[in-house]
Length: 115
Length: 111
Image (cartoon, rainbow over all chains, first blue to last red; front, top):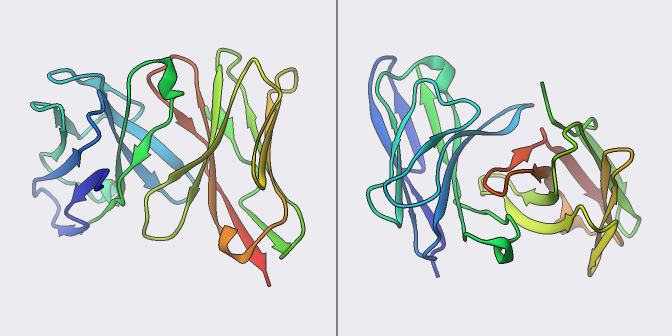
């Protein structure tokens, strides 16, 4: 049972380069999220999706774009990477509804360095 | 403005003793609170949660207490074990869609 899978696990970019982080979940969850974790800052929400074809901004959306073309996949794009985007990125998913109790399930993370 | 605060960056506890991790929040609209545990190079994993209509929830060695009047919750781990050494994040939800996380507390359990 894979759960939430993130690719790649590590990446080094030069300033101005672009890349896409892929998140895939096999739990048939409706909701998916992208977070970044920085030292002393906890996890901050970048963008999220409440269903296929929908996306919404989180707390720190600037410099990122997302797409949810398929229910199981949520892509995070950096069009022109900046050193301030050096971080660990986590994807999460959860079921819709009260029975889900707001519990999100996380992937293992992508460590991104922008030089 | 941080809506969820974990004011202790780190905590060190002897094996077998109680670990108490604290979390404060400012938004009175939060109605669900969760604790996550994170090991290095892994994603956060759900540990325990509590609804705002309760003041205590227990699961094995882990108990979460909620004091709504003080806007404070705490996680108790009894007895603490070396495998509990990790970063613990407090999170809160008010709209059913999103979670707001605290900065985390590093717990070290010494054997």
